[in-house]
Image (tube, rainbow, N blue to C red; front, top):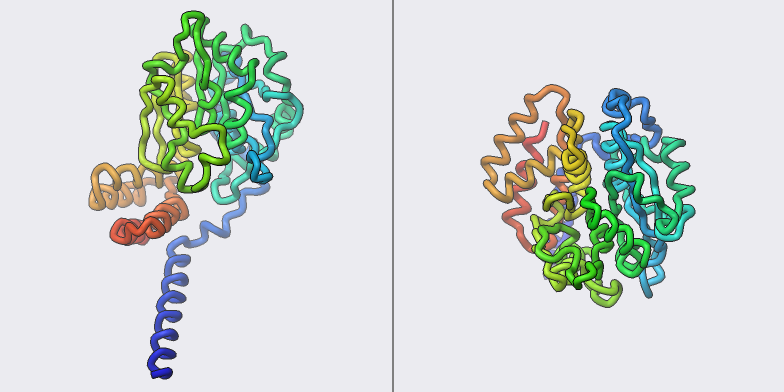
Length: 354
């Protein structure tokens, strides 16, 4: 009996080990890619941006550095600032950086999500000077800006919704009909903003933000940590909340209001902001992560075969890469949720990436 149990145990260990080896083999060399020394001058899109000055955009960061009573560190998401920053800059807009309290806000860097633009930002002395010396939003001369962009990060859930100057900034851009953009937790800036007649800013507006489903998957006790769940609060204030698939890009455009659901929505939010300002965004080669998100959205909406065809097309397109890690992550999440068939299909798609 003990021999039989031992044999079964060894077989299980062998199968698990073989799967892990096979799984990581699907990722190729992606995990070994090092962009830490990336410089802005090495990215053609940044170098060949619009040379004419078209105006100014104010990016606003949270100053909160602690995740509520947990004591864990938090702040703004670097990727949500860096990618939008370079889209705005490449399209001719000067980007200034403010925060709730001023000074150097706490930055959250998720190594798994970092790409060329994100590391380039960290190595960009001028950009980092603006971050480290951000001015308090209450000191901003809002009249000189064509648009305002609220960067996400869990810290925003604590100070964006409660800060008087944040509310004043949203109200000013609302009343002057200027462009307002926000991504992920950034729309927390809209909470409790009301007009003189008592109308909520988000009332009857299409809005996307980090969903309850996404929040609770990462932080099961989020209801006890945050002052509110963002989706719930926006719905309570009569927003027409548009939720896309978890962890895939979803952008809502309502007149001059542009909002994105999560970090995967940043590129589109930034380019929709440029459109709202009256310009066609500068052509840009999509990042490997964006291509993977496109594949995943087609998989969810049109099925496996359609996604497989897109992979085949992208495999044959010169200078086009697909992020294996992004697809692999979604396969793992599906497996964790017990959606084994979906997970297996995603792994087969991953295997088709060249």
